[in-house]
Length: 106
Image 1: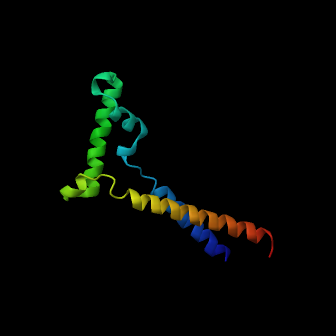
Image 2: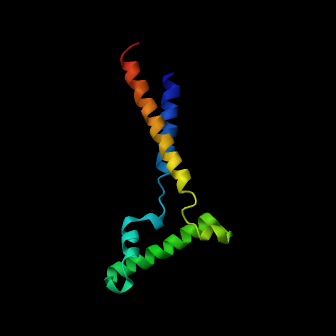
Image 3: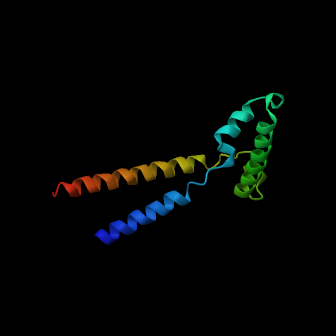
């Protein structure tokens, strides 16, 4: 049982670390700069904005591939990401509950 638990937790940890690749389109500073008029940005802010605009475009192109309708909707997989986060939370709570109950020696 302990081997199964260790293997399960290891796989879960690898999955969580691997799936933490966030979209450059969701970068907090980039979103903040996108809401400002370009004339009000400093030179550093403008360079950051341009860099992340290019990264965002590349990221959308990688996700969308050659489908032009997907390019218009960059957050098409945001529901899948939220469902994945909920599943991870559920598994984490289940593991914590398992450890708590096993410590009670029931």
